[in-house]
Amino acid sequence: MDQMVKSVGGRLREERTRLGMSPADFAELAGKTSKSQERYEADDRRPDTAYLSAVSEHGVDVLYVLT
Image 1 (cartoon, rainbow, N blue to C red):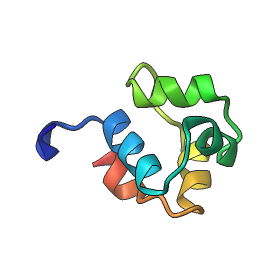
Image 2: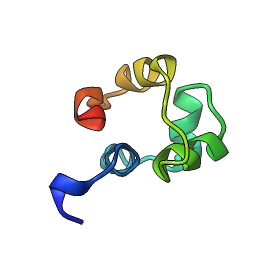
Image 3: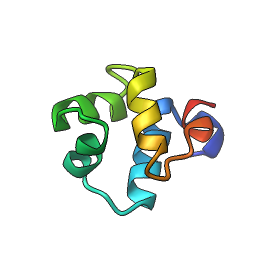
Image 4: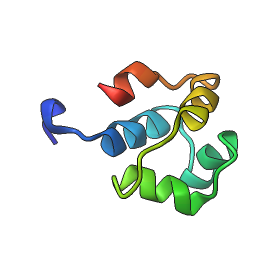
């Protein structure tokens, strides 16, 4: 997929993959369910600030994810 057309969910998935984590493990970092993680990555839902803050503490580039 072209870098310019990636969605928030696509960039979030990319960051999770870069960190070598499964959706379930990544969701656990932020206190969410794996179903919530799947919805974020599918762009069915948008992550809230608490989620973004939690994953940023584990190396996620939140600025990249959002922009």
